Length: 507
Image 1 (cartoon, rainbow, N blue to C red):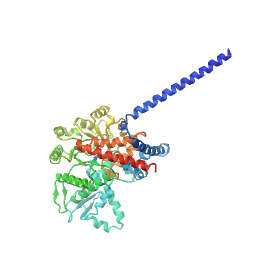
Image 2: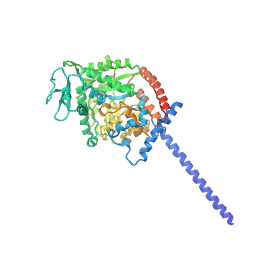
Image 3: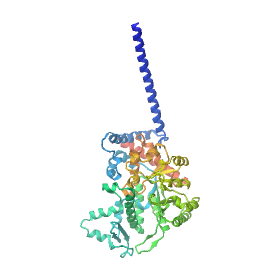
Image 4: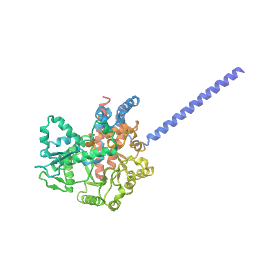
């Protein structure tokens, strides 16, 4: 009897343990499948990798996991949770960044023409002859090229910059102070923590100073060629620039009209392609400011129509630019925009705001209703689920500019950027850099690095990077023939890139 009881107890224990093991195994299987289903939604998850790409991916992920694990286990704050300026100079040490730097990135589809060149290169341009400077009482700087003292209004006195530089006790220090007028970069914590309106005020000051410098025709030519060179060196093969187009002048004061600037962009690009045959080229998105009158917007759209007729290979379309929270919403311009939408493609900024239920984030609805081809920033889109689903269904790409959103005070910790959700959902995302010159960022590599390590899932791998690059071709304003050539050149460069990763190994 006793042995029978013992047998029953043992059997019961074995059954209980077996059942527990079965339950646990089933749970773990469900968990694995759950995670796999989510991973299979991620941007790039549908890409099939070659044997070489898999080998390169193992190397890339080794370094990515090592970086993230060090931060995850470290009690100090995650590096990328800080302001970009706090860690910018440390990025070059990252093995992941070093790999991404070599990567062919396709195109940059959201670039403002006046802010695409780095501050050091702008400083070099101040060594051009005949440059006058006017230091204003509010600390801002006006610049103008002239063969005599400029007639342009200056409340103080115009002085040749060369004379000011030569008269300084320390030229290096003089240039360091001058450089500050071309960049938002600062180590001042108070400025880093400023609210969005204060940051935009500083941004506008930088913009005005740079525009002063590059409105002189010979300098604009050097500026634009150097900017293309920088993007090319960063393995960017195509750029869509946003520009309002404006008059530019010669040394004697004579001016060229706005269409001349479009011709200059096209001429310089052709010269650049002659010297760099694997560079695809540029497209122009003509812009008007959100503060403009409806008549001014109509004039700009008419200029776009003229460009479309006379320079069809250059024009991509039209956009309205400027701080959304302070500017007029798209709906204020509906009469002229509705009138033009069948003739001109739109590439609207929309939702570059932290607000919810305002004219700023509701610009997204008007952008979609007006037939925009892509949406710039779309930062607030995640708050509008119906619109998010509609945009995905319509295959409207999201132009994401992560570092711009940090520097212009939209987000502090990039892990909280809505791009993380867009990537996780596999939505049509393209990465760009907005105004990289204004914050001393790479033309595109810094944005790719911060996105890959700080925003995307830890599991996101080389497929995500490749898909982001491919998206920049797919959603570009190029015609199908030029896209095909773009894909061919990209694939060649990608194969070389993968081999370089493997050859570099874990060194």
